[in-house]
Image 1 (cartoon, helix red, strand yellow):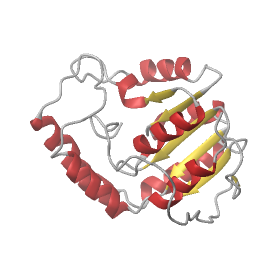
Image 2 (spheres, one colour):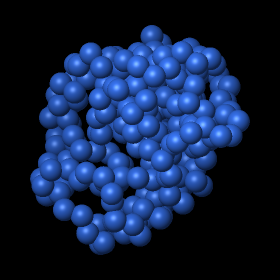
Image 3 (cartoon, one colour):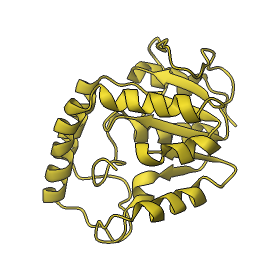
Image 4 (cartoon, one colour):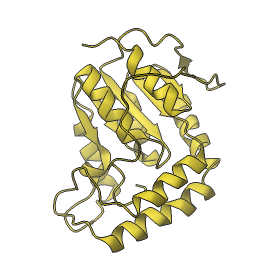
Length: 213
Protein backbone atom coordinates (compact mmCIF):
# COMPACT_ATOMS: atom_id res chain seq x y z
CA UNK A 1 0.00 0.00 0.00
CA UNK A 2 1.03 3.64 0.01
CA UNK A 3 0.94 5.63 3.22
CA UNK A 4 -0.08 3.94 6.44
CA UNK A 5 -3.34 5.82 6.26
CA UNK A 6 -4.50 7.52 3.09
CA UNK A 7 -8.26 7.73 3.21
CA UNK A 8 -8.87 10.85 5.32
CA UNK A 9 -9.92 14.10 3.70
CA UNK A 10 -7.37 15.33 1.18
CA UNK A 11 -9.27 18.10 -0.56
CA UNK A 12 -12.36 20.18 -0.23
CA UNK A 13 -15.56 18.13 -0.50
CA UNK A 14 -16.84 17.71 -4.04
CA UNK A 15 -19.98 19.83 -4.08
CA UNK A 16 -22.07 21.61 -6.67
CA UNK A 17 -20.36 21.86 -10.02
CA UNK A 18 -19.62 25.50 -10.81
CA UNK A 19 -16.75 25.40 -13.27
CA UNK A 20 -16.35 23.92 -16.72
CA UNK A 21 -15.21 20.29 -16.44
CA UNK A 22 -12.41 18.88 -18.51
CA UNK A 23 -11.94 15.22 -19.35
CA UNK A 24 -8.57 14.36 -20.87
CA UNK A 25 -8.31 12.25 -23.98
CA UNK A 26 -5.75 9.46 -23.90
CA UNK A 27 -4.37 6.49 -25.76
CA UNK A 28 -5.07 3.74 -23.23
CA UNK A 29 -6.18 0.43 -24.71
CA UNK A 30 -9.49 0.64 -22.87
CA UNK A 31 -12.83 2.25 -23.60
CA UNK A 32 -13.38 5.92 -22.83
CA UNK A 33 -16.81 7.42 -22.30
CA UNK A 34 -17.04 11.17 -22.84
CA UNK A 35 -20.75 11.48 -22.03
CA UNK A 36 -21.07 11.53 -18.23
CA UNK A 37 -24.75 12.41 -18.13
CA UNK A 38 -25.93 8.84 -17.64
CA UNK A 39 -25.77 6.60 -14.61
CA UNK A 40 -22.50 4.93 -13.64
CA UNK A 41 -21.99 1.19 -13.20
CA UNK A 42 -22.53 -0.67 -9.95
CA UNK A 43 -18.93 -1.78 -9.31
CA UNK A 44 -16.61 1.19 -9.49
CA UNK A 45 -12.86 1.46 -8.92
CA UNK A 46 -11.46 4.86 -8.03
CA UNK A 47 -7.71 4.97 -8.55
CA UNK A 48 -4.95 7.58 -8.73
CA UNK A 49 -1.76 8.56 -6.98
CA UNK A 50 -1.73 9.27 -3.25
CA UNK A 51 -3.15 12.75 -2.77
CA UNK A 52 -5.08 12.68 -6.06
CA UNK A 53 -8.44 13.17 -4.33
CA UNK A 54 -9.72 9.58 -4.36
CA UNK A 55 -11.40 9.65 -0.97
CA UNK A 56 -13.14 12.99 -1.45
CA UNK A 57 -14.34 11.92 -4.89
CA UNK A 58 -15.43 8.46 -3.68
CA UNK A 59 -17.48 9.89 -0.82
CA UNK A 60 -19.25 12.25 -3.20
CA UNK A 61 -19.84 9.46 -5.71
CA UNK A 62 -21.26 7.21 -3.00
CA UNK A 63 -23.56 10.00 -1.78
CA UNK A 64 -24.80 10.63 -5.35
CA UNK A 65 -25.29 7.00 -6.38
CA UNK A 66 -26.06 5.23 -3.09
CA UNK A 67 -23.36 2.64 -3.82
CA UNK A 68 -21.57 1.33 -0.70
CA UNK A 69 -18.04 2.64 -0.26
CA UNK A 70 -15.04 0.45 0.59
CA UNK A 71 -11.73 1.98 1.67
CA UNK A 72 -8.83 -0.34 0.89
CA UNK A 73 -6.71 1.09 3.72
CA UNK A 74 -9.38 0.25 6.29
CA UNK A 75 -9.51 -3.30 5.00
CA UNK A 76 -5.75 -3.67 4.64
CA UNK A 77 -4.26 -2.93 8.04
CA UNK A 78 -4.39 -5.31 10.97
CA UNK A 79 -4.45 -3.92 14.55
CA UNK A 80 -1.22 -2.15 15.43
CA UNK A 81 -0.53 -1.23 11.79
CA UNK A 82 0.48 -4.79 10.97
CA UNK A 83 0.53 -5.67 7.28
CA UNK A 84 -1.13 -8.86 6.04
CA UNK A 85 0.69 -11.36 3.88
CA UNK A 86 0.11 -11.06 0.14
CA UNK A 87 -1.93 -14.26 0.23
CA UNK A 88 -4.12 -12.94 3.06
CA UNK A 89 -4.61 -9.63 1.28
CA UNK A 90 -5.62 -11.19 -2.02
CA UNK A 91 -8.06 -13.49 -0.23
CA UNK A 92 -9.62 -10.59 1.65
CA UNK A 93 -9.99 -8.54 -1.51
CA UNK A 94 -11.59 -11.46 -3.32
CA UNK A 95 -14.22 -11.38 -0.60
CA UNK A 96 -14.63 -7.58 -0.84
CA UNK A 97 -15.20 -7.55 -4.60
CA UNK A 98 -17.63 -10.49 -4.53
CA UNK A 99 -20.54 -8.14 -3.84
CA UNK A 100 -22.87 -6.93 -6.58
CA UNK A 101 -22.42 -3.23 -5.84
CA UNK A 102 -19.54 -1.16 -4.48
CA UNK A 103 -17.14 1.74 -4.88
CA UNK A 104 -13.57 0.82 -3.95
CA UNK A 105 -11.19 3.65 -3.10
CA UNK A 106 -7.48 2.90 -2.93
CA UNK A 107 -4.31 1.87 -4.68
CA UNK A 108 -2.42 -1.40 -4.75
CA UNK A 109 -1.02 -2.33 -8.12
CA UNK A 110 -0.09 -5.82 -6.95
CA UNK A 111 -3.76 -6.72 -6.53
CA UNK A 112 -5.36 -4.34 -9.03
CA UNK A 113 -6.09 -7.29 -11.32
CA UNK A 114 -8.49 -8.75 -8.72
CA UNK A 115 -10.50 -5.56 -8.54
CA UNK A 116 -10.50 -5.02 -12.28
CA UNK A 117 -11.91 -8.47 -12.95
CA UNK A 118 -15.09 -7.51 -11.11
CA UNK A 119 -15.29 -3.79 -11.88
CA UNK A 120 -17.56 -2.46 -14.58
CA UNK A 121 -16.30 1.13 -14.22
CA UNK A 122 -12.87 2.61 -13.52
CA UNK A 123 -12.37 6.26 -12.57
CA UNK A 124 -8.75 7.36 -12.82
CA UNK A 125 -7.96 10.67 -11.11
CA UNK A 126 -5.02 11.90 -13.16
CA UNK A 127 -4.19 14.75 -10.78
CA UNK A 128 -0.86 16.53 -11.38
CA UNK A 129 1.86 15.04 -9.20
CA UNK A 130 2.74 18.38 -7.61
CA UNK A 131 -0.84 18.76 -6.39
CA UNK A 132 -0.72 15.24 -4.94
CA UNK A 133 2.58 15.96 -3.20
CA UNK A 134 1.26 19.20 -1.73
CA UNK A 135 -1.78 17.46 -0.31
CA UNK A 136 0.37 14.71 1.21
CA UNK A 137 2.53 17.36 2.87
CA UNK A 138 -0.51 19.11 4.35
CA UNK A 139 -1.97 15.79 5.55
CA UNK A 140 1.07 15.33 7.74
CA UNK A 141 0.05 18.48 9.62
CA UNK A 142 -3.63 17.65 10.01
CA UNK A 143 -5.44 15.17 12.20
CA UNK A 144 -7.48 12.68 10.14
CA UNK A 145 -11.21 13.34 10.13
CA UNK A 146 -12.24 9.92 8.87
CA UNK A 147 -12.30 6.46 10.37
CA UNK A 148 -9.03 4.76 11.28
CA UNK A 149 -8.30 1.06 10.64
CA UNK A 150 -9.48 -1.10 13.52
CA UNK A 151 -6.90 -1.22 16.32
CA UNK A 152 -4.64 1.36 14.64
CA UNK A 153 -3.96 4.54 16.57
CA UNK A 154 -3.12 7.88 15.02
CA UNK A 155 -0.23 10.06 16.19
CA UNK A 156 1.62 13.14 15.04
CA UNK A 157 4.76 11.04 14.60
CA UNK A 158 2.95 8.58 12.35
CA UNK A 159 1.42 11.28 10.22
CA UNK A 160 4.68 13.16 9.73
CA UNK A 161 6.58 9.96 8.96
CA UNK A 162 4.09 8.37 6.58
CA UNK A 163 2.57 11.38 4.86
CA UNK A 164 5.79 13.34 4.40
CA UNK A 165 7.51 10.22 3.12
CA UNK A 166 4.83 10.13 0.44
CA UNK A 167 5.98 13.50 -0.91
CA UNK A 168 9.23 11.89 -2.05
CA UNK A 169 7.48 8.73 -3.21
CA UNK A 170 5.04 10.72 -5.33
CA UNK A 171 7.85 12.65 -6.99
CA UNK A 172 9.94 9.54 -7.59
CA UNK A 173 7.00 7.59 -9.06
CA UNK A 174 5.37 10.54 -10.84
CA UNK A 175 5.75 8.86 -14.22
CA UNK A 176 6.14 5.16 -13.47
CA UNK A 177 3.11 4.72 -11.20
CA UNK A 178 0.49 6.08 -13.64
CA UNK A 179 2.04 4.13 -16.50
CA UNK A 180 2.07 0.91 -14.47
CA UNK A 181 -1.58 1.40 -13.59
CA UNK A 182 -2.45 2.02 -17.23
CA UNK A 183 -0.70 -1.17 -18.29
CA UNK A 184 -2.62 -3.23 -15.71
CA UNK A 185 -5.92 -1.67 -16.75
CA UNK A 186 -5.17 -2.36 -20.40
CA UNK A 187 -4.47 -6.01 -19.58
CA UNK A 188 -7.26 -6.75 -17.10
CA UNK A 189 -9.85 -4.00 -17.60
CA UNK A 190 -10.82 -4.18 -21.26
CA UNK A 191 -14.43 -4.89 -20.28
CA UNK A 192 -14.70 -1.84 -17.98
CA UNK A 193 -15.67 1.72 -18.86
CA UNK A 194 -12.79 4.08 -18.11
CA UNK A 195 -13.14 7.73 -17.11
CA UNK A 196 -9.99 9.87 -16.83
CA UNK A 197 -10.46 13.04 -14.76
CA UNK A 198 -7.48 15.37 -14.71
CA UNK A 199 -8.65 18.19 -12.44
CA UNK A 200 -10.86 18.94 -9.47
CA UNK A 201 -13.22 20.73 -11.82
CA UNK A 202 -13.50 17.62 -14.00
CA UNK A 203 -14.24 15.50 -10.93
CA UNK A 204 -16.95 17.91 -9.80
CA UNK A 205 -18.46 17.94 -13.25
CA UNK A 206 -18.47 14.16 -13.43
CA UNK A 207 -20.37 13.89 -10.14
CA UNK A 208 -22.78 16.63 -11.14
CA UNK A 209 -23.48 14.99 -14.50
CA UNK A 210 -24.45 11.63 -13.06
CA UNK A 211 -28.09 10.68 -12.69
CA UNK A 212 -29.02 10.20 -9.04
CA UNK A 213 -30.22 6.69 -8.16
